[in-house]
Length: 139
Length: 149
Image 1 (cartoon, rainbow over the protein chains, first blue to last red):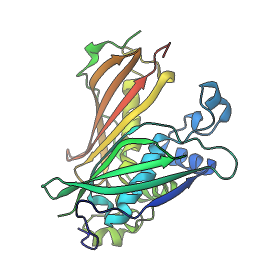
Image 2 (image 1 turned 135 degrees about the horizontal axis):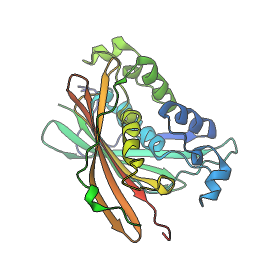
Image 3 (image 1 turned 180 degrees about the horizontal axis):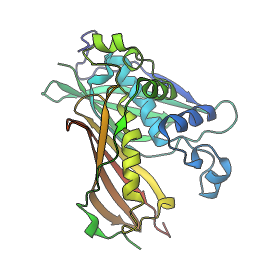
Image 4 (image 1 turned 60 degrees about the vertical axis):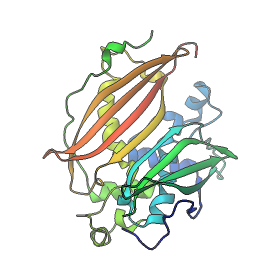
């Protein structure tokens, strides 16, 4: 695989900041075929008790996966990827959207040619994905 | 009304084949802002040992979500889709989903639990090629919010 980067336990991956705006949500809805209106229609979002339109949890999860893919070079090295959806990313229609800040660290050598990478995605200073991790083939 | 735990272990019939195209992968990669050449350039993907361009790790949701709808809309299960929230998600890739794959998926209900008026349903979707090669396993935990929750 990609031997160009250190995959030692303790390695911090280059951080990633991603700004999500309304048009990003519409684009993801189209690409993923998830057209739930809470991801593009303020009225529907507020009717179900949300403060505003929220990003698809799967979009946040996908964006967070980029930190690992861009670090390891071969995205096919990601053999497992999981998370819980802890908090919504609220995306106002103000042209600024929401800033998602992604950090990650190699936390464990699993001994089978893979390492565990713990991933944190924060919005508004709070973690939005809980227990996010990737298992990455390094051998 | 809580979901009936008797549905644990239920399996659903396989989906129609899903044809994975380079164009759909690129569209998905664009939508998540991913820049890896392995998603867009067949030669770059081949240099990494793949048969053709590969899909981002969460692309499997495009395949599995459609299959999960057979569970969510199972009239016998009586699940209120309007109250469903995505609780967690896990993908295991036996190999990356690759352009040219023809994928069939089957959904299985692995667990149903209830807590504080909410139901938690875990649906496991096994994604294989039409030739029977297992490609990916997607597990989705769906929370069905209770009337008072």
